[in-house]
Image (cartoon, rainbow, N blue to C red; front, side, top):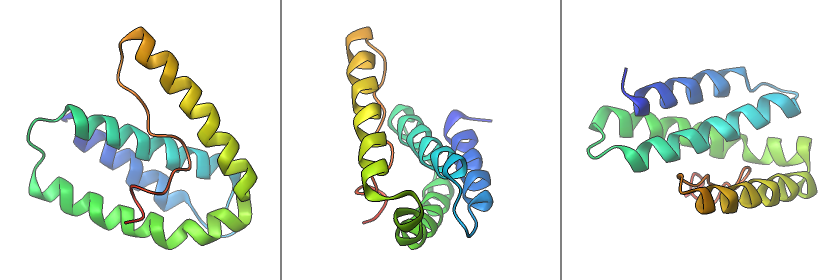
Length: 111
């Protein structure tokens, strides 16, 4: 299975596990799996239309859950997660690997 398809499948499973009430560990898994999709998408020279359609549907689910996630986790915690992930990205840049989208950054998937 190509990396993008595997990342999208993992993202779907994580979103399927996201229920009310929102659990912190499940939320982190959803956000990290979305980050994995971002990296796989950047590395894929020609994603299929089906993969992009599925990703759009899953991102719609994440956008719909965003208010619930923010209420349950809190904006301060999400900001802390983003900051931690950004620091990790800096280390990745220095090491020459691909970067991660900051955890809890809904800006790309919320459009």
